[in-house]
Amino acid sequence: MQVYQNTASSMGTRFNLLLPGIDKFECDQRFSSCLQELNRLENMLSCFIPTSEISFLNDQAFNAPIKVSDELFTILNSCLTYYELTEKTFDISLGKIIDNQERILIEEIGADKVLFNDKDKTVQFASAQIKLNLGGFGKGYALLKIRDLLIKLGVSSAFISFGESSICCIGKHPYGDYWLVGIQDFYHKDKSIDTLKLVDQSVSTSGNMKVNDHIINPANGKVVTAKKLITVKCNSPLDAEVLSTAFMIADNLQKVKILEAFSGLEILEVTYNNQIAEISKYKSQ
Image (cartoon, rainbow, N blue to C red; front, side, top):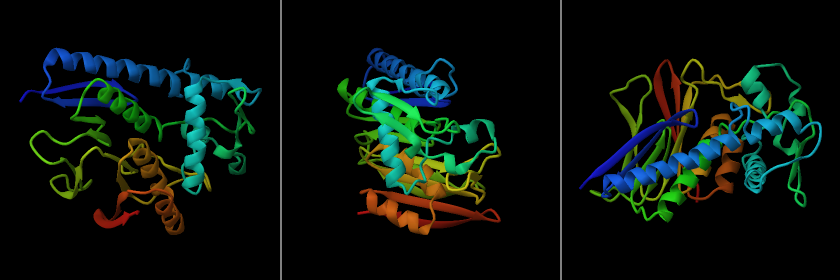
């Protein structure tokens, strides 16, 4: 069986697509369609592209209500829903902290201070401190859109990833009953902490193991310093992406609430003490 694989830079990382059992010409067409969709999404969602729709919103939305596209309006509403369901641990309003590391009044930040007018499809910020950053949302949303696009194009088996940390699988491996994904020990690269079996499922991993990693706790504006990795497996690539970030921040009570709010979750938490991995696993109903 032919196996097609192609890679491109997108969403601030490496986008990789693997398609088994389809000829190269058809695969090239599908890959090109994926890149067109990713380019469209980046030009809407990236706060690092000055001409993007989200950048315009960040520049203008404190001054007046700003009309946005129907898709972005829906996205921002869903981010508010995630904010509420994750006990405020997932918060896209922290862009100013993330981008500039400035001291801000944390009480003026919060996704609930992004105001929506459903009739006019406008968005306004209740605080000048708010700058939206969809970094913990964008790759999951892109995987969702790419998955749906490929299925529409007739693909029944695929492995889609961004930088190996955000993964979505369509169907199962052509030579097995599932796609197999390993979770590597950060300090012992020859060891695997766990392996996950995926069929029409997604995995996202968040962590703060690298020098430039900085995950901010919205409750206090401080960087999460405990060295850990969170891997979330579930049906939705968007849920996986959002919840891997939320679980990095959540305390024990918030974790319980998140598990109650979302079904079908399998979560692996790896905390490192003196480079030794301590593993906790969670499941929701």
